[in-house]
Image (cartoon, rainbow, N blue to C red):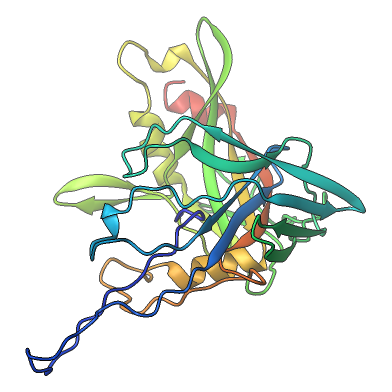
Length: 315
């Protein structure tokens, strides 16, 4: 998925058919702008947001600007379920290779774990007196009944060669699905997980795994043949199939809120590798500035293996 934390930069433009005797300033009039970015997650109580501002480099190349545009010293509060949660500013050492050398600055709260169908509001009072605001409505994911009763529960399914899982359809909302194989290794008491591809396709004569991207489709299909291939190639060097205890496959489903869904839809490059967008829109739901403030709810669905099926594969 694309990063939700970004810094606003200026766009340099070229003018054609202008006399070389004319004096041209390629820079637009600079206006300092401010951004707020954050995703409220249901799978953790540790929430993070970032604040930054636009900048004007001294040279034509924006990469020459090495001063981190992050904003510190703001008063940031979140209002959730009739409670106020203050977000503290902090920083961590920078291990990336960006042009900024100072620590990464952000705001956090470690006591907020949002649930489904809730309103989350945020106010960020900047040191210069400006106010950035936004709101998110977490997706309505009921504890029971979200996944359709007709979904398959066993691998392989009772009928057919394809496993089908269906869930509640929320209009204009994106879902991000991930299939994990749960297993134990002989001599190790820890439960291990590894992602299972949705399918395999041929690329340059090689079988390549394919993993799903966020989609509006409220269902997931996977062929038993795909699981067969994955399990047959799964044992790593030094282990045999008999060293593994295969438990289940879990569908981990992330349900985006309205704002994350719109943001992702606005920036993704299309449905295939042949599509290129030359004019991506700048989506924002921040009042008084730019950026994205959203939330997601994470839920799961478990598929059990038929023991005779695993035995037939050598496990």
